[in-house]
Length: 118
Length: 113
Image (cartoon, rainbow over all chains, first blue to last red; front, side, top):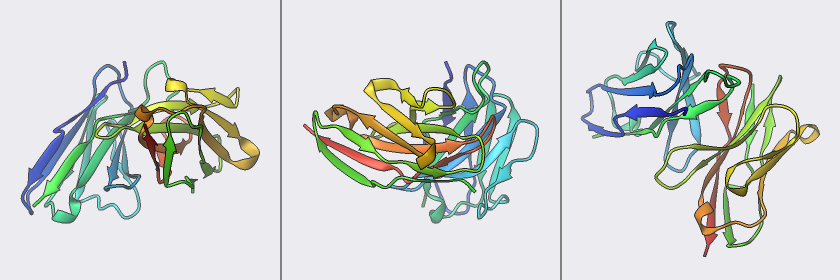
């Protein structure tokens, strides 16, 4: 159990376009989902925390108008990178928490989405 | 603010050597501690976690970690590493339900056959 999927697994887009990344909890309901960004050979940096039905909480330095997060249901959160630029190229990872029967403090990670902006 | 520090950025070991990766944290409340592993080309997987109780936590694949509250540490250990343990290891700290995780910088482990 506790499987999190992301789609797409990789995407290449042109500068100026927008890209949507989906994060789904497949076999549990996630009250909270987290979006991370990982640069090559670096650690994960939290971008934002999203709770179902409410606005996401963004970390300092993350542009909320550029990285739009929608947590429409307990099993789906989306991250839209708007007007992407080459510096947005990165590995985006989501995680889901609030596993039913668990402590709530556990998070389960998706496989990540590699975004390349040309 | 919470923070996590992993002192070893790169570790190279031979098979059968013992492993200890350091993790120190700062957090102003009830702390939950995690070690995650990321094998090459794969996503993060949970190795072990500490929420409360016995400070010596056993995880998967022969890994264990010890929570030492007085030292704010949660070091990861394995008595005998294998080539398949080559991966990047992340220590993370979080609070109670729904709270975010803060990750350390990661330790890249290479095990030579």
